[in-house]
Length: 350
Length: 128
Image (cartoon, rainbow over all chains, first blue to last red; front, side, top):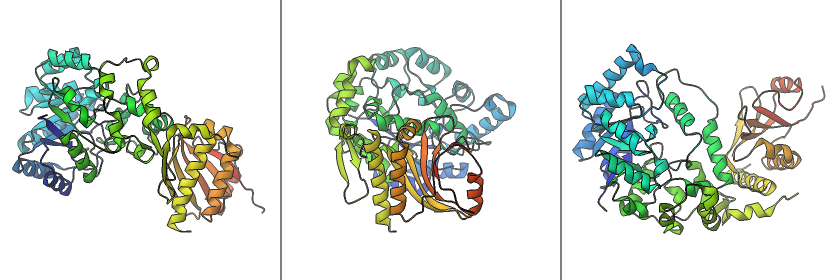
């Protein structure tokens, strides 16, 4: 299908050159700016200054590619409503406008309205605004949004997606490979945490990211949670053609090679490999599980008519037990793959 | 100690813990370390491992951890888990050869939880 791919850019210029030099399938890249002004809801490796943003913008435009700045902090601690906070944000957005970035992603409704009222940069409502209903979508459109990244929790709720499509005229984007837990209980707390860690000082100095560790633990114990995660497989993009033709690939904290692999998969709408290769988060699980992507062929038909009550449905659980393999003794000559269910059958060796 | 040995030890420890507790866990990183104070040892960063698992199978864990320390030619005088405070999440399993100062700090404490993030599995008392 004809589609527009929004592609992650880690933030360094060499990376951008490599991305745009290696793929012709990029409609727009997106990147974070400097966390000294406003944070983002994800790990931010680049910390691009305004001079660097200008250089990246010029380069993207010379290649016929758009550039989107991600300023989607889900929590700014109220600073945005202070005079100093307003002045700083206004100054930063004015600079981005002067530079000529194409779009700005924000999660706070206040910034959506500010962009609409005071700037000539189209605003994109972040996935971290959690737009999961036609009512919310209408609200943001009326506030001035030109595009909405729909809450990925409803990626498989076609009735909701269709209702949102009917309710608004603005562009809709679907985030295809976030890989987060379905209805993740950590979602708000984790993104608020990220927003402060990757935002203006003071930044919390923590040893362990509890939310990330817990997320990993849950899935290591129960890989059906990976299947239930509302990712969209490359092969299934066509199923969404009546909703949108704009798809966003997550992965700003990954290496360029990883990003290019994802772009290629979503561009050709096929991937013959481990599903975990495509998931933005959590990346550590690639060393535990092999879930052959092609073994999920046809699952979309079940998900399209699925019950949202997992414990009465059981489809993803059965599928996980059937297709999930675990790496054992990884990194040694004895490395092997075995069905993950066999681990549970071994019991205690004393 | 060779890098191959380190890789095998990581894989072996991960496998033995999986077999012990009956579900997958990950050792996302196995690091050898030496600190300025004189302590040295290894840290196995874990995911999917809970304090309950450790408490139930503590004896078996200790045996596995001491075995892995031996494979890496490390003394296993002090064995502990690092926990995310207030939770069941074990962030790391550690084997440490304590320097005299750190030994006196830990030896002077009583109980398994001298700090909210530490669960002591074994501390070999030294003769003065």
